[in-house]
Image (cartoon, rainbow, N blue to C red; front, top):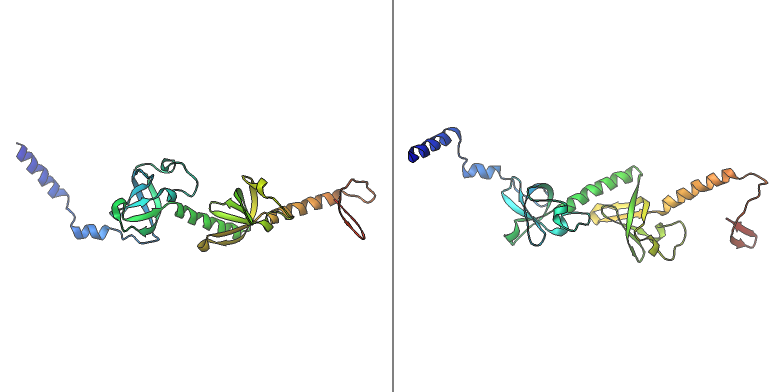
Length: 230
């Protein structure tokens, strides 16, 4: 009875489904190249907080190191992905030691590419962006614009600033001065924003003044021909 049932199942399979040949399977396999954007299903998260993924259509596995999971700071991979999720990833390089996968992949770099595209569009449209100051370094401020940005000391304010320590953790509105994704270079300016604000403020204040009006002012600077009053 069991043999008859097994034979019937085999007959049903043979009659309804053609088993693909090895050549057919190879033709369906996608070749993975450096720089390709691929889809990877998260198979597991290993003890080093790396994502082990199966590359869709390629029949091979890849690894996403913890530092390559997100462009934003995270404490654990689970904040971004869990087993079974399908992620868009960029192929960074092939791994010689294939114990943890055939290719090194990155989600962070793919996010960065999108950010660079958005920043280039904003520069073309002369738009401003708001960025948090992450570090005060010699020569200026390091900010987070989705990618690392830098505000040189001469572009922070429209006046001389001796100590920038108070700017740490502040958010500044800035204009994009220079952008070069290939060199990972993003130069920003807050000085232009301040200058525009001060110009508008000056115009508004000047409109309030009338000839003969008495106002209070602070001596800003003395010269041999008179005094400058704020």
